[in-house]
View 1 (tube, rainbow, N blue to C red):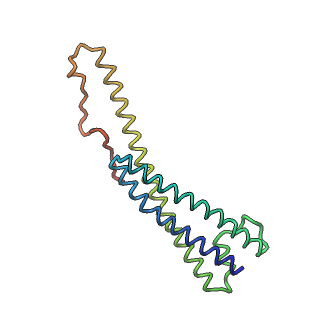
View 2: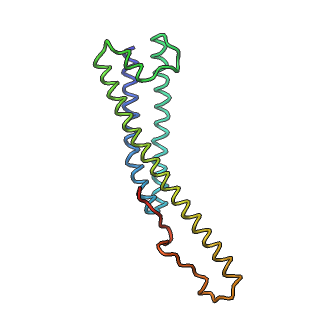
View 3: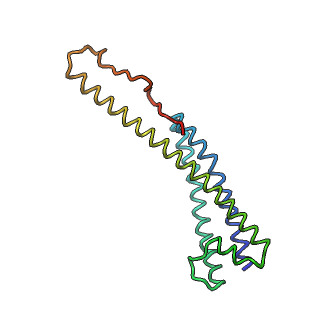
Length: 171
């Protein structure tokens, strides 16, 4: 059982490191979205995907380890959560503390990543709304300019504060 706990700890530590490495990528992605820098967004998405793939591998490993721990403890596989494993280590306070601290650190890291993902999603939604709005303005401008007796300079629509590619990035 001790080797399973050590393997679980090392897997979770690596997973936490990967999640921690994702945070600056998400922060850079936020800045790239605000700056409308599609090249940077694409590069960051590639970096992000590599880390997410590695996290997926570690998640599978963590699941296997927790299933093995459940088997050793005589519990059904797929039912053991990290908190339950921590509680079973009451006779091993050092391992229990290490696992509890790691669990707490992982929760904070994942919570920060979730905040950044929500923020980036909201920014992207705003960008898409702005693109759709601009497309509608262009369509309506083209449709109205062909059916009127105005000169070509009168077909221009000036909307104050609506420059191309701008949106509200205040969150």
